[in-house]
Amino acid sequence: MPQGLSLVRRKAVLVVLFVPSVERDGTTAVDQDHWVQAALDMFGTIFGGATAYPKARGTWRDDERGGFLVRDEPVVVHCYTTPADIEDEANLAALAAFCRDMGRQTSQGEVGLVIGDEYLAIRNF
Image (cartoon, helix red, strand yellow):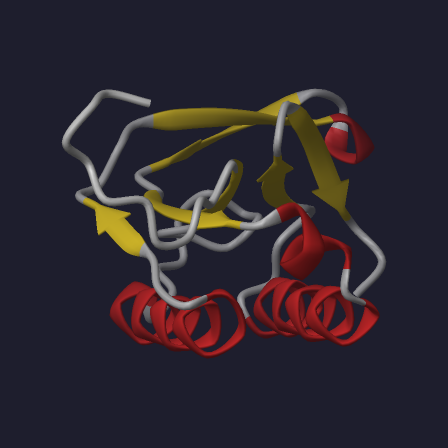
C-alpha cells in the first residue's frame, strides 16, 4: 500500500455483472437502464457500492441453439467487496436471487457474473 493513503477498509474481491441489452434471441431489446440501476442499488445495499461502465460490445455463443451467436451491448457493473462480505450467506443469496430474476425477466440463456477470478454462468432461473 502506498504511503500517505489512509486505509480505512480494504476491499480486495472484484465482482463483475454483465447487464444485457437484448434477450436471448439477439434482437429484442430489454429495459437495460432499469436493470443497471437495479444492479447498482443491489450492490450498494449488499456490498457498499458499484460502478457501471458504458455499453461494451460482446458475443455469447448459445450452445442450446446450435451455437447461435448472440451479439450484445452489455453494461459492465464492477463492485469491490471484502472476502467476508462475499462469503456471507445472506449476501450470496441476495446476489444469486438478483441474477436469477434478471435472467428470467430479460429472457437470457445465462447471466454472466465474475467473482474474483472465476466466471460464473448462471443459468438456473
